[in-house]
Image (cartoon, rainbow, N blue to C red):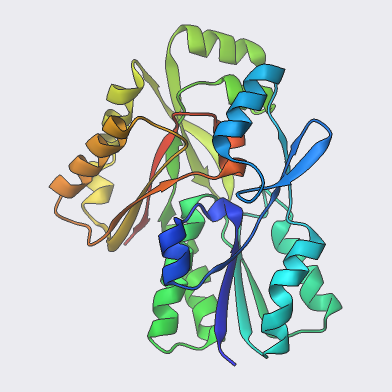
Length: 282
């Protein structure tokens, strides 16, 4: 018996981090036309972009399936493990509820479901924190309490390159997207109280916009939790990613600067060339 961390595919952690901390991933579903695919297992973000552009629409996304989630949980239930599931925010998906129902059906009281109130590596930050607490010898109950107490310290935001995907997904009007794209407007989307909101609006080429967005956070970055920070993108040129990483390195604040590529669900909604900087505030 031990403590097992499980998340869903929207956490956007790299394969290396998933393996390092022995995290199991339950994929959400991506529906393209009349077919459903498991995120990260059966379809890639680049394939999603190709399909979306060809069909002038975005895929639908759906919560994790009961069958897949059940198969992931089963061996850990049989082993008597404490299972800590940290999932995509409940205002964005019903995935956490799927896990709760599975625990209830199995009458398994050692399954702890945490609503991250976030997405992408905003979830990933909480997973790495949980892994650290396990290494410190904390109990499952203590870990859940500590993660939930610190949940509102997560700072998750990103800048989209085009409004087209948000419009196709119904998250902004077609007229707004047309006007915004014509004016080269690139909104900063922030996650607050488990929901996405528009903050600043940038204008210009993506390379300069992304760097300005990162530098606009300098005051918060200089007092952030120094243990780690994420640069997560949905397919940006390496030069753009490198410029943000070099800027973060210049602050001499962070022990680990992780760069990750967003998975299919996140990419379906934000489109290509989106980039975010995500960290814990102190």
